[in-house]
Length: 618
Image 1 (cartoon, rainbow, N blue to C red):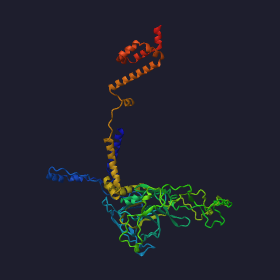
Image 2 (cartoon, rainbow, N blue to C red):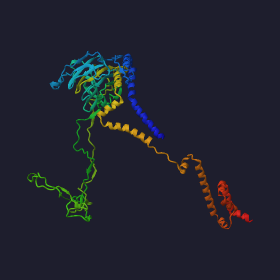
Image 3 (spheres, helix red, strand yellow):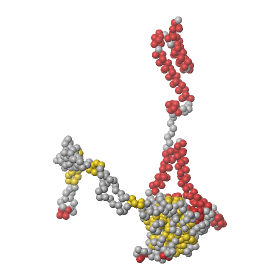
Image 4 (cartoon, rainbow, N blue to C red):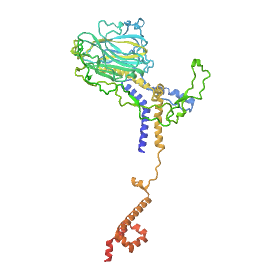
């Protein structure tokens, strides 16, 4: 019973947690927004302000019952983030213009003239389903076009003793089929011209999401300068271990952050959670530093180099009794045709009930034949048709003879070219010290429009970056969380996309109900316990049962006493001649003997003993 109650309590607790989950989530999000100095209005005052109008309506409706109302969802008031602390670039687009941004008017090389132009449209506007009225961002408006836009930093960023933190927000409002949303930090060069910004414009770092088909990427690429040749080579960070799919499909605003430290470590974060990290020296491809030794390109394998570890034994000879022509299987000579085998009956016969179709044309369709059916005469027989011996494996079969394999005495191992010092070797122990950059740009191609960008920020102080993130992205997160549908709505929406979830829902609801019915309504009634069960469990029982047990114990003692009398030889001789007064008294007063108990039984045994009889004779 205790187990049943415990199970019911667990089920009730689980259902309660599920019902409270969406409420607690919304409260948590709102509390986060309050912690970040966000103004939150519950609009309950508006409801109180209209109380007078409701009283007037109440006079008209007299005693009509009030309609049930749902408490209004908390409303998050938008406040544009303000950059505080050391920073090199900050853009929230809340001015509603592209002031400070430069649209590229260049053409892409090695591309058809029709699509070579960077003529994709950019707009500054609110999100289509904005939860924060007044919050604006940069929106990529065109699909299947090249887009390029850039802006100068307040001052160039130089990689020295301070880290680099770059972060910005992206929302794929219409999802994403094939396209990118990454940024480029443009290298500071005398030739940099923002209105000629193209894909080949030198950059120091490229960072951000990119997706095509089912390939979900989060790029972190930096261009490293070879100290010996002066040439630049792209270095790609390892792929994140986390599943990135949700960030591209949930149509929510996500914060992308890249942190580079002077000790050559890096971190990639999404929504302030690390999804990738490592070292610039060991976790990029190709590696920053080349190998100290390389294979000699002029070294070639000698013609007589033997790489065979095993060879056929040249001294082996095929045995004389080896028969290569013996078949793998032969007829079983010991097999005997079963009795009753019908040799003259075919296994299949033409269907006697089949009729040639009326439209059958023998000139076109050939001669008509009835379809074949199993011969009914063979149903009770072991078989029909010509009997053949079954085939068995040939014990003499050996197959084609081959000489055995032996170790190759001339084996020299797998040949490899010799190693020589790498003429291009260098060792850069500080790849963090990249080329300075002085502009940020978006150079993108996308098959999906309405990609929303917001709150770009570049700094060398992590606390400053987190404060900017909390004032911008944190506000969006609170607003989106407060507007999220409840658990029931989310479940229904998920079931519309995946109908098989209905089966899960039904089982989830029905299983607890079935368990409750089983445990509460189908319990077995407790039956009356037998005397043996009372003895096992030590349960108390009525006095009648106790008396019955006492009588049973007395009867057992009497039976033991009688057995003792019968086992005594002297008692058997004397019992035929005389009876003791105690025995007569015992026969006459049976009830008195039961009351006297064990003492009278012992006295009776003593009276019957041989020693007692000898004393009497003396």
